Length: 444
Image 1: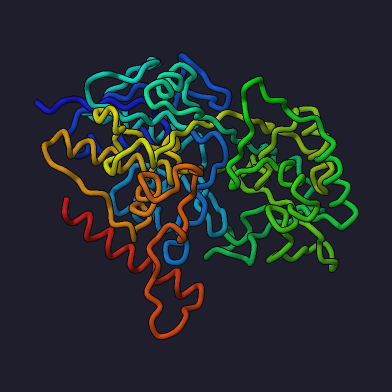
Image 2 (image 1 turned 60 degrees about the vertical axis):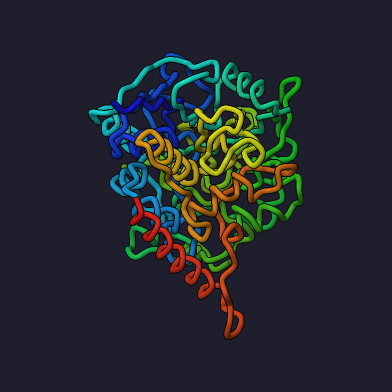
């Protein structure tokens, strides 16, 4: 009889790992501490709960690396991607989902699988025997993090991630705001009008920046450090880097036309639909560590949000990851304890999609090992392969930081015949990756 595979953590990575292993015929036990032991960011005990954005980002599988990762996960019969598509919301060129029904559906599929069982308990020590995948994500419990630190000798496992606020749509003043996706992206009118846009003139923008910089912020506890991942910086940290930084980041006023005024906005705040009903919108790129009272005061300075009601304010939480290039082998196993694999954000990938992709890979590798065979990693010219290559040796261990998938992780494209334009070059990356990933799948 095949031995059981134990997975710690029921987030994106753990859920996908469990599904993949069970589909290969391996019995799986998911160990999830919620809802018995809560976290700062989680609200439910569901698997694959989305605690930050409700977006899986770009769905363009021809010219975008994360869209390509969507395609690869779909080709590998990934549960997360299949469920996301079943619960998608209009979001221009992005894949956004109705977060609660999405998590409920993932949970139902896993609980209904005959080879998957669940233990609602907190694992506080790295297991000494058995086959395990650690997929505890950014909110790894203090006890388990201490055990990992002890086993690996790592000096630090924590950096900090910030959460964006969510606004009730009915409280937005639509005589000021308007509905439009940047550059009218999307195939349908619903997709092309997926975002609320709140314009600022120059005076309003600089007043907003001043308020951001002056607002009360959450203080760190003794011994904590604030090493933020650049892709998810708190908005006030971006503002500290320069008064124009936000105008060239989440508040860039490009690709948009204000139907209420002929005057071009100096900056634009976008809100993205957060649920299927369209009653909730999250403020795009507005992760924050401001205190709650400061948040309501500062965000109500945004034109159109003067009377906004907030379903959730922003916050800050610890994010845990290991130095994977030093600690993991090419099979995602802990070199010092090869019965243990790591998957998801704890390995040093960043984002829902990347986490789920590493769960998919860890689940398949662990199942193959239990079934008496070896599964090589996907080729490094695929999105999944580029990620695992990066975290298991491609990155510089001394400066290792969490990373989103991007074409910079891929082997360069042969550009014979002249330099390719960016769009053509990206298309060449994705064409090559799809061919390689399809061939990799065919060997299994």
